[in-house]
Image (cartoon, rainbow, N blue to C red):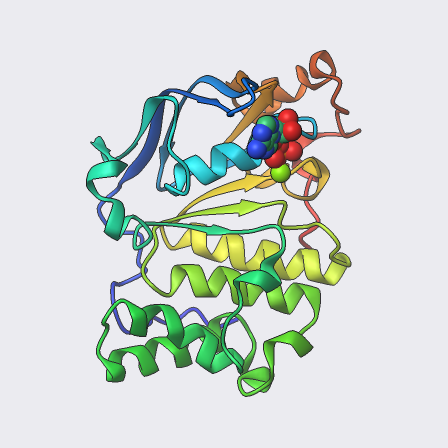
Length: 262
Ligand SMILES: Nc1ncnc2c1ncn2[C@@H]1O[C@H](COP(=O)(O)OP(=O)(O)O)[C@@H](O)[C@H]1O
Ligand SMILES: [Mg+2]
């Protein structure tokens, strides 16, 4: 993979550090069910946080709040200390999300067109868009597929494209919801590579997954969400031992082996 600089903000790790946070975030559905309850998290743009929990724990709901897709019943989400309701139109330029079904996020007829869509939509000059797209295509290793229909890509290629489509607009924080689901081992490695490369460039990452054995070795923190509440938020080494309390499986072996990266 190519590590040279793209046109645009230098991915040199010297970006101003930002953070996303939420304070006492609660979400009550119309039927009275409490999807999230008093969730407070601090998410610096230079950390890789893994969020895990049982099905229905509220992980995807939390992600949707963090990117401003839903309004909380109470509490708030902040970007660098400012309520996202006050930065809304521009929030996606800072915080992006890769949905579990990444293919629904792809809109271009070709890989190249898809990557250009976001920047063009944000009013970036064409010459800069073209430079960024070409850099990004090389960065995610899709040079050979640049003119291919995205729907012909493999699962791993498609996820890489979806991640690239989010960060090409300049997002400094990326939330990936179940990024390993239905990927073969090489697809998992591809996604890990792109993710860890981004982190190396000063981008914050949240990985929502129950497949801890694939990624936890790279995490700065592990958050356990249980019935809409943050029950654990700490160093992966200690948080790991709490998993069985929440009916979750602790992967066997030591933390440093919990990666599928070669
Ligand atoms: N429209 C809705 N009305 C009531 N409950 C809902 C609605 N949408 C989702 N839920 C519930 O919210 C909870 C959290 O869902 P979700 O965030 O998708 O869980 P996870 O991603 O952790 O599997 C689940 O228990 C789900 O059943
Ligand atoms: Mg989910």
